[in-house]
Every structure is written in C-alpha cells, then in structure tokens.
Amino acid sequence: MKFNLEEKNLKDIQADFALAFVENKNLDAYPKAKDLFKMMNYKGEGTCLDLANRTLYVELKARDLEEIKLCFANAYKALKGLDIKSLKTHFIKGKCTLASLHALAQGFIFASYEYDKYKSEKKSYKLEEILIAADEFEGKEYKRDEALMGLEIGQIVSNACSYAKDIVNEIPAVYTPLSFEADAKNLAKEIDALKCTVYDEHYLEKEGMNAFLAVNKASPLPPRLIHLEYKPKNPKFRAVFVGKGLTYDSGGLSLKPGASMVTMKSDKAGGAAVMGILKAISSLGLDIEVHGVIGATENMIGSDAYKPDDVLKSREGKTIEVRNTDAEGRLVLVDCLSFAQDLKPDLLVDLATLTGACVVALGEQTSGIMGNNEELQDEFYKASKMSGDLACVLHFNKYLRELLKSDIADISNVSSARYGGAQTAGIFLDNFIRDEYKDKWLHLDIAGPAFVEKEWGYHKPGATAAGVRMCITYLLWLLRSKEWA
Ligand code: BES
Ligand code: ZN
Ligand code: ZN
Image 1 (cartoon, helix red, strand yellow):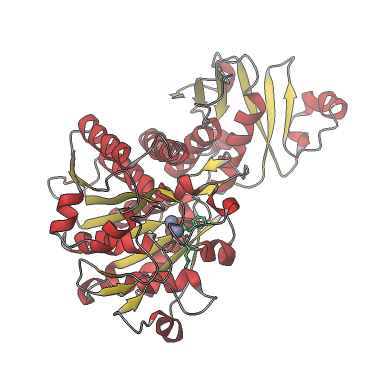
Image 2: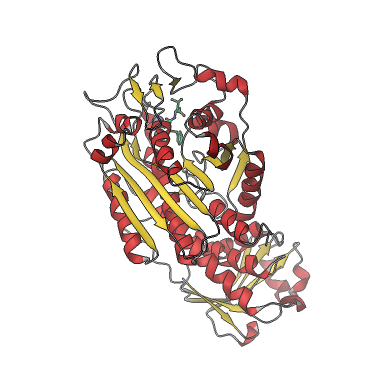
C-alpha cells in the first residue's frame, strides 16, 4: 500500500473514491447527502456508501489515536470488496500531527493484513494508493516534515508488525527453529546495519544452557539461539529484547489436552515480536543499540523427552526441578536471559507467550507487564497505551515468591499453588536475573493477545504482533527525552 501526502485540497485530488468523516454522529455537516442518509437509514454509526458520488462516510468516534486507526481500518473494510485502486482522504488531526499520520498508516496497514497462504482462492483487493489531502483540515495548521515523518514511521512500524504476524501465523510443519535462523539471516542481509549470529546445540552445550536443551530433547529439529545486533555509531543506550520462540508447544510429556494444543504454533510470538522490533528499529536508524535474542525450539514428546522429576542445571548455575514439562518457556528463557545479561543491557525486556494464567487474569486482548522496577513498569504501561497494544501491570509479592520452592533443587519450574500463575512464572524468571539487572528488566507475558482466533478492533483473526508497537513506542519515547508526542 502506498501513501501520498498531496499539497492540494481534497476536491482537487484525482482518485477513485473519497472518505468523509462523520464526527459525533453529526450528519448536518453533509447537507447534500441528507436524502442518501435517510434512504440508507444511516444515523452516523459505522459506514455509509455513496456509490453515485464515490464517497464513503465513516464514523469517527473521537480524535484519539486508537479511534483514528479504527476509523481508517473500518473505511478500508467497507471498501475492500470494490474495484477501487485509489482513495483520497483528509488526515484526521489529533493532538499531534506526527502521531495522527502514524495512526492513519497503521489503520490502513493493519486492516489490509491478510494471511491467505493456505487458501486456494486468494482475495485480491485492489486498493493500493491512499492520497492524503494536506490542505488545512478545519483550519488546523500542519507541518509537512512532521506529517511525512509520521507516515514513514507508521509504515515502518506497521510493516514490521505484518512481518511478525507472518512468522506467528505460519504453520508448525513449515516454521521451525531453522526458519527462525533463515529469517534472521535474511533480515540481516536486507538491512546493512543489522548483524546476525546463530548458535546451535553444540554452543548451547558448551555454555551450559541445559534448561533450554532439555526442552529441545524430544524434537527431531535442533534448537537455535539467534542473536541480532543493531549498533549505530553513537548509541544513547543499549536495549536487549529476548523472545520465546517455541515453534510448537505440545506440552511435552505433561501433554496438553487436544483443545489447548490448537493455536500453539503461536508460542513463537515472543521471538517473532523481537524480529519485528529489530526490523523496525534498524530501518528507522534510531540512535539506540538494540539486541534481539531468540530461543527457538519445539516442545515435543518422545522416549527421549525431558521428564517431570528431572533436575536441570541452568547457565546461571541454578538447578531447576521439572514438575511440569509444559512450563517450558521459562526454561528456554532463563538461559537466553543469562546470555542477554552478558551483553550488559541498560534495558532488558523479555516477550513471551508464557502462561494461560495471564490470559485468565487479563483477558485475550491484554498483555501482562511484570518486573521489579515500578517506575519502568508504569512507563511501559504508558507506552502501551500510546501504541495501541493493551497491557496491564501485574505485581509480584513475597507470598507468591514462596510458591516456587523445591525440595530437591534450587527452584521448581511451577508454582505449588493453582492461582497467580502469570506472576509466579515472572518470579521464576526473576530468580535468574542478576542483582545489577533487577531494575533494568521487564517481563511481558503476551499469551493473550499474541494470537486471537476472532477479529477484534483493527486486528484480523490470528497473530496480532503483540508487544512490537509497545516496545518501539517506549524506545521512541526514551529518545524524545521522555516526552510523549
Ligand atoms: N505456551 C504456554 C502458555 C500459553 C497458554 C500461551 C495459552 C498462549 C495461550 C506455556 O508454555 C504453558 O503451557 N504454560 C502452562 C504453565 C503451567 C504448566 C504452569 C500453562 O499456562 O498452563
Ligand atoms: Zn507449555
Ligand atoms: Zn509454551
């Protein structure tokens, strides 16, 4: 999809179709369409198609960023079946021009995302060009540079989200740890500023990453630890993102029930998000050193599978009693987090589809933010709100900490209580974070929104790239000296 900012009035732009916004259900703004609205029984909610005048009326509920995205996404949805190549529109100016145009691009790109690789009949939508009138919308001034920058950032971030979604939506027979390796290497080939190093099972053995290796044991496919690096000349700080890349989670010997296993191709969403973040940050050329670390493996069953009752020694030296092989993500993550801490991060964030408990606690649309640094958690919460990712802070406490005690090893991989599973998983990870990084670390449990089987807002059924926009928004905010746009 192409976006052009035209230095023209809307009426002087040549296009197949036009958008007209209906705010506060105020239809009086369009007196010429009075008869059409009456005939179509349109009261200002949703969309109304005026084929004779090639105009789509679309409701704009409010001028905040989410409603701007929804407005353009709904417009795309209403028009996608028509034989239209180009669409002209005003831009909706919210508080900030840059963010408003970012939102415009994101609304269109998210709405146009399709995963139909396995459909015999592909949908062929024709709408390719969005022409944006840069005339003053309702007398409000705009700055062209800011507007163009907003469009550029909006496209880069949204396309990075589509890239992450494609990884998550791909089926487990096709997308394996070796696909993560190939994709990461291709990304580094495509973007000069990105470097990619891939480590195999021999390296993991040498490094004592026995928790990670145990999860891989029953898989016929080798594990991969992928390290992506983006190092600009004068970086302001160093951020490391760690992603859970389980290309399939059957539960292992603590096998998942059939119904819960469906959608577990999405257990690689943390890794996919890290790929998306690195793609966007390096394309934007931001002055931040950013690393991506992905732990990629399957969790399968077989006679060589790791077992409940096993004790594993992690890279950090702590021993772990395995009481449930379905709590595998945390085992992979602690060895990856150990590797990540050696990179001396100023900020360390892991993204993982870690617990069903987080979905129960927060619902399917919301990620859990956990850690030890309340200020950092609150900042991330704000970033999530700005970005469109939904998130909520979950706090640890000393009573939950006690639930991971093991009689035989230093720690158990599951809690001894039924409740609070999202936090106890976070606390498990915290046990492998060194003192100097305790306040620099955040854990994002994206199990809910990473993959949702029904459509919501501007998201299609399936992958949503949960966490990508939130993390990028946080970094952009840091670069703006902690000023919200
Ligand atoms: N990958 C799952 C978590 C998950 C559940 C992701 C639902 C997305 C949707 C994870 O590896 C898992 O199985 N966790 C267990 C932990 C339990 C055994 C302590 C869970 O949540 O049931
Ligand atoms: Zn699991
Ligand atoms: Zn899992």
